[in-house]
Length: 190
Image (tube, rainbow, N blue to C red; front, side, top):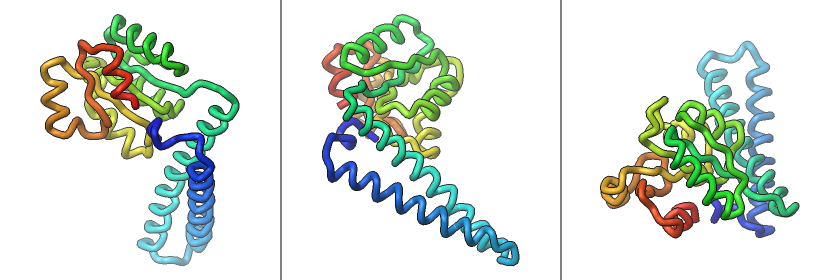
């Protein structure tokens, strides 16, 4: 659910509603299969996999619908900043707030992951050097759990360009140097 994919476009809203209805129909069908206890274990397992996948898809679509409703009501988008560096946390939080986002802050990668899954922000900016937890794998875990928002990794200055040249970091949409200009942050979250 990147900022560019959630726009105030009726087609986008219609797609979101359509996807949510499809997910509900798939969940309903799979639930009927699961209710039949006489089915073989492999059939029940496959139905459970379908239900799990569709629940994640439905959750993502519902989050998009909430964002559309918030935008229609003139409410700001949500952003999350994860870092154990208080200065970086304050700078990033301030810049995102100035850009019009409602900002949540987390001082550990575990706290950041939980906030990411609970709050479902449009944007998450993660300091991959956060020492408490596993910040580097946070994006991968979030993507596997169905998070579709934009994720930006903050990396050491010399390594940021190198990682960007290699195609980025798994799960992250962009890599930002630790010593960045506000314009670089705006470009990374766009």
